[in-house]
Amino acid sequence: MLLWEVIEGNKKKSLWLFWAMGLCLGALGYLIGEVYSHGAGWVGLFIAFCVWVVLTLVSYFAGDSIILAMSGAKEVTHDIHPQLFNIVEEMKIAANLPKTPKIYIIPESAPNAFAVGRSPDKSAIAVTAGLVAELNRDELQGVIAHETSHILNRDVLFLTFAGIMLGSIVLLSEGFLRSLWYGGGSRRYRSKSSGGGQGQMFIMLIAVIFAVLAPVLARIFYFAISRKREYLADATAVRLTRYPEGLASALEKIAYSNVPMQSVNKITAPMYISAPFKKDKAEFSALSSTHPPVEERIKILRSIAGGANYGDYNRAFVKVKGSPSSIFPVSALRDSEKIEIRKPSAGKEEKSKKTKIREIGDLLRVVNGFAFLTCICGLRIKLPANYTKEEIECPRCHRHLHNPLAELAAAGVIASGIGKAEIIPSKEGEDAGSQQDYQRRSSGWESFNCRCGHIIQLSPAFGGKYVICRNCGRKIEILPLERG
Image (cartoon, rainbow, N blue to C red; front, side):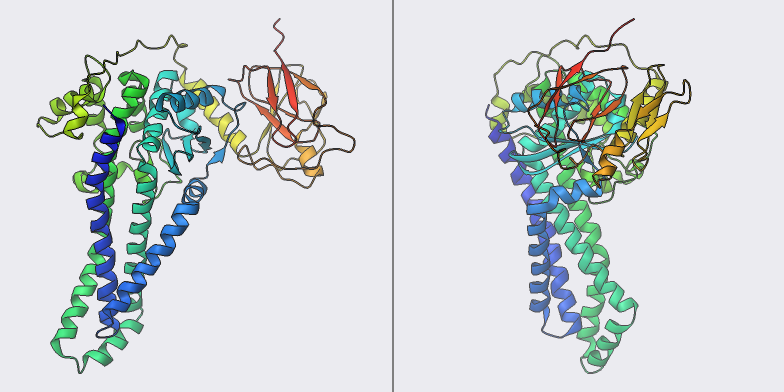
């Protein structure tokens, strides 16, 4: 079975919904034009089209950056969380993507994730700090596989365009209604309708009703697009990982988390792996929810038997839904390839709640530019980004420790977290190829300066032998923690 058949079948269904949103936008623009001037409906239609074109171009060339910025996501390096990078690289190979997606961490305690990008060549996966701390390796692999599937299936670009169209409809609708509310539009209308008869009054009424309903209809179309694609991403994730329980268990932890998300909005919500708004579980969620019911998705995943190909997922889908309808085209179900479901990884013991909370807190601090020092006496000190004194006294043993943030301050750079490589000038006479090593002092987070002054962050999960400075390219050997 060729994957492109599945992708094309899903695209055809979603394109109808996409064009329905386009009709809403065009009709709204036309009616607004007719209200302000009889016969000017085509002008309104043209303006609506221009707004959509401009926002679409912005979306295509900068949509991923805008969405990541709206979410507060920060790009991370391999030394921050090696396991996360390894999993993303594994899924990139399994999905045969041409390039490894960039990896971002969102400073949120709630577990969740999404993918962005206009093509497999230019894509990114963003995960929350809570997700990294809460999930084990198999669960994290299931989530990354799901997001990789969205990139592979070209969902992220399509959802971004649909989101921009929704934004265009909301923009026109709110602009029109506010102009009437503040009186300018209604006065102009009354001056014209006094001699225009009942026809103009009727157009005015229709325009107001449609301006109220168009954003609602567009959201329903948008959410329908998102829901259809979640099933396919789940199925593809199962195929990539060969372990449906990993994704099912991850969805349970994400969906039933009581921690609210702060950075999400109505446009970005459909991009997340699980609905971030708790109100999506309301009575009418079938129309208004951004995602299929999570209980249904989990039940489908746990009903898969015999293998991990699309046919196996579809049989579980039909069984749970209780209807013969399929999310795959008929040709895709002729897949005869046998994909065995693998056994769970031999992972570490489940982390305690206290450990998870501490890991989330530390990762959030790293994202926000904190530095971590470990004194010889064993005390760990966490310094905020705005603490720029050259030395700090250990509260326990009173030793004086070097503050790595002082190097950045001396170069006129404020630490902004792990998302940005702070480019600072190398010290005079320094060669990027010169040797440097660093002796680890603890198994937790640690911060130190490269010889060029750039700050290096080492995570508890780091187990490599060296890191590469993002500022000067120097290779720094990391000496392991001395036990005993």
